[in-house]
Length: 302
Image (tube, rainbow, N blue to C red; front, side, top):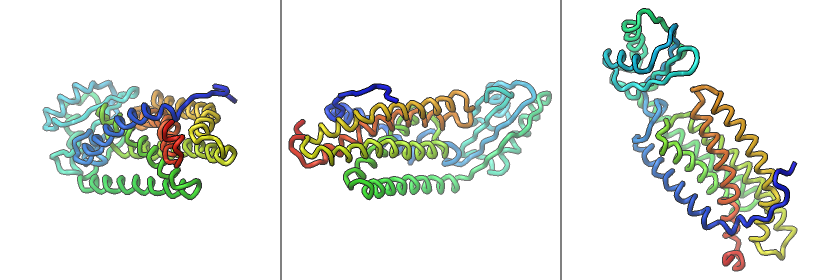
């Protein structure tokens, strides 16, 4: 199936514009990482420690009414979120002043006292101490670092060292782009985001390998052609396949985002952003880096 047919787009010729765009996005992502490290971002209880409860009420209860009731009971710094359908309410408290292990009981006592005519049941309750949150931060950094190392070793063995470096650069670009979007939109940084980041890293790598494989194949076939010609031809040859694959994955991610429910809403959003960014980086980040790395004056001047 060919979505676009034969194209002759000068992708490598657009590298300056793409590098500027990617550089700005990466810079915002780095600022986001620094802020996350400082705890200044919207940190979820996975990293900051705290309590999360999901309650199901017999009758509808607005977040405003619940917030006023909890504030009256001494819990002022509370994040409330309505879950559509089923009269459910998600309650999050980061670094609560109440001793961990008693927060859930306190919340239930307050709500029972303030809304005696609206009984509820606890669907789920999670409590994480600050020390566990710090450990999760460190484990997350190790996981991302090891995954990047694995990528560069695999691509270096499968293709060439320069391909490995380009693949890691593109993958890091995707990671920074997702973090940049979440940081700018002030979305919660939690373990689901890290899961989405690692998922997109794998997806982006797969897409990049497909492009690299065609480039390597054409490099062996067209030894006399300038590298930029070879790279552009290779990207154009797999462009239709790349778009169809990305579009399929994008539609699946959009379905999760629209119909998956509140629990995985941010995770699905990260996937949606990641699929778009991953497709972009395979073409406009990874391939130009390898093209510029090749020792040929023709390509550098082009």
